[in-house]
Length: 166
Image 1 (cartoon, rainbow, N blue to C red):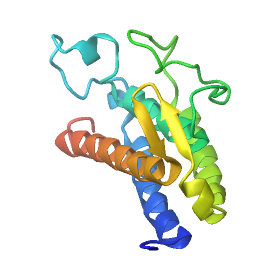
Image 2: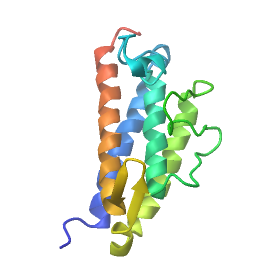
Image 3: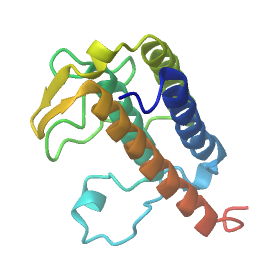
């Protein structure tokens, strides 16, 4: 039973990626390194995960990795580091808005091509990760939710700080 087609799936991805792009683009410079959750007792804050730019990087990293369908052999493009796959890893530096927006555009192009050529057989291919096994088509939907979740968090943060940084 076919519920959605490639064009429908791409339209949803396009909107989600646009939302993430808008958040990254619209973040004032003075909030780029601001924690989204200021509670320093939180384990994620300690490793820097909660900073605005880092959540953008995290979202793009997994958007890119999950398109491949496997962790083995994955490497993000230059200048990004292979950080996110093990506990307590930290990035060596803050990535710039321009770097993240360029990465986002690379991901957009890769997803548009992959989704437009996705076959039923590819959608049912099983993908294995340390957290479990999932068909590739379901992994695409999972990833879509992940992008939407973090784009919404970034937009919420910006809305809460609107006017404070001006």
